[in-house]
Length: 302
Ligand SMILES: [Zn+2]
Image (cartoon, rainbow, N blue to C red; front, side, top):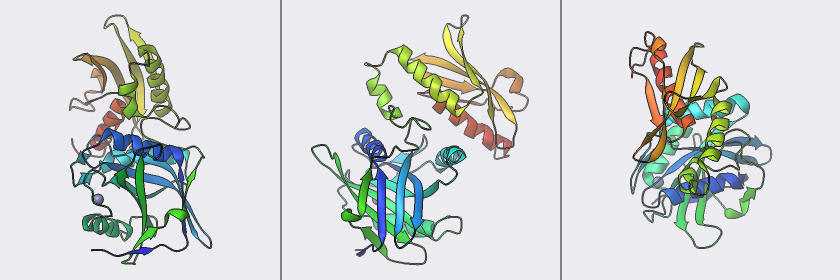
C-alpha cells in the first residue's frame, strides 16, 4: 500500500460553491464513481498556495462504474478554453473523484499512476497536481468527507495535505457546472431537472436563454409560429476562425423537454455529415454541436 507523506508548505483555499457543486454531483451519482476537473490559480512564495475557484464536470461522454471513472477530456478542454477567455490566469490544477461509493479510503494505485503520468507530462503546465478525493457520505451540513493530495513533478512521493492547511473560502467560484461566468450561484445543471417542479417553464426558458447567450453571443431566440416551439438562430465561432450557422430547437420526447442543435440546410455543403447534437439544455446541445463541428473543421472526421 502506498505511503502518503504529509505535504509541507502547501495551503489550499477552495471556494465553497465549488465544494457545493462537487457534493451535488456526488448526490447525483450515489452508486458509481464520478468526478471532474479542478481549476483555479496558485502562488508560490514561502508556501505553495493553491486556490480552487472552479470545477468542470466530467462531460457528456464520461464513463462511470463502481470502481472506475473516465472523464470526457475533449468536452472539458472546450470548457476550459471557454473559462480561459474570461480568466486568462486560470490553470488546470488537478482533479477530483469519488470513492465513497466503493469504500476505498485513499487514492488507489491506478489513481496515483495516472496522476504521476499527468504531472510528469511535458504538456502539463504546472509542476504539481492537486487531487481531491471524496471518501465518505456523512450526515449533517458537511454532506461528505474529503481528502486532499498533491503530487509533484519528478517526485515519486504522494503528499497528503493536512486538513488544517485547507480552508473553505467564501469568494465566488468563477465556474461550476451548468452555469456560466459570474453566475455561479445559480442552479447547476444537475439540479435543474429536480427543481423543474418549482421553476416555471418560463423562468427556465429565460435562464436558458441568458446562459446560451453568454456562451454564444450570436444566437438569438425566436418563437416559431409554424413549429409552435422556441428556437434560437445565429452563428457560433469555430476553431478555424470561421463561423457556422446554427439552429436550436426545443424538442419534447416522452414528456421531457430537450434541445437539439443543428446546422441549417445551407451549411450542409460545408458539413456534409448531418451535424446535430441533443441535450437537456440548449447550451449543452450547442456546445456538443460546437465540438462536433470543430472536429470536422480540424479534419478529424466524426
Ligand atoms: Zn480512485
